[in-house]
Image 1: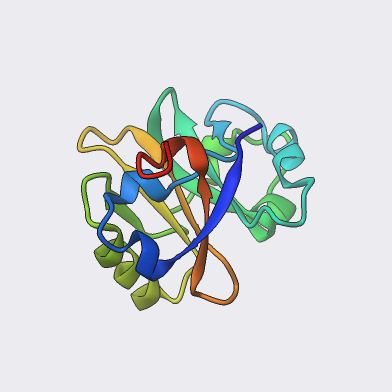
Image 2 (image 1 turned 90 degrees about the vertical axis):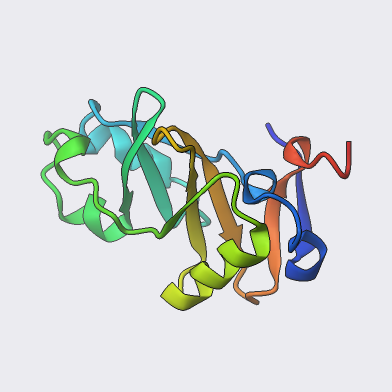
Amino acid sequence: MATMVHLTRTEVAELPVSEITITGKTVQAGVTVDDARRAFASSAVQVVPVLEGARYLGAVDRGTIEAADGGAALSSVAQALVPQVLEGERAGDALAALDAHGATRLVVVGEDGRYVGIVCLRGDRERLCIDAARLRVLA
């Protein structure tokens, strides 16, 4: 399991957004809604990115999962629920985009649509959960 650290917006503002992500839970588009429900076992999980291979397709949240037919393919219910930015963007700019949406999660993708990770802003809207292994400044 990844080691998480909590840093503030100010501490990460100049880093590439790719360094402040977590990989967290993801599910593949071909699984069923019932299979994907396990990803929500933890109450901390708000949204789960849906991937096709390494490519980001969309996300599902608890409401989507609860309302969907359990036998349906997850790809049929994945939506653009979470704002997204490109991996090279400066973290401060990415967090501004997150604020503009009033969201606490932000998907980070490569130019090719490849899923990089998700930015997880805590409820205080100041601190972020970050995978310590991604931070070059801590390595």
